[in-house]
Length: 64
Image 1 (tube, rainbow, N blue to C red):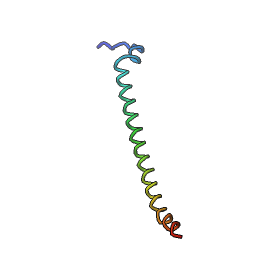
Image 2: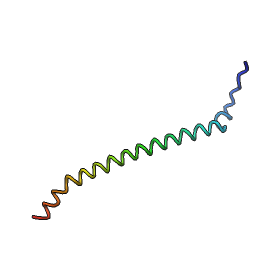
Image 3: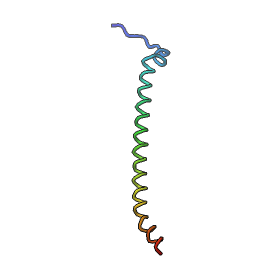
Image 4: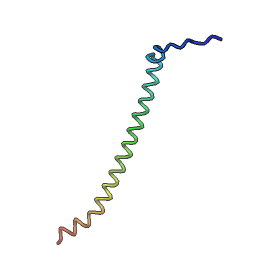
């Protein structure tokens, strides 16, 4: 059985390495986008709750 020699230049800058790196970066970007979206949804929900909580106060202040 013959083992392939390890060519570090090819391993680091070859097509297979670039494809694997691109795939990993793409997965990281997708994961960050999903986290950002989830955080934005939480902020929107909190703002909606805050608006609901402050709505009666605003209406009372206008009538006085």
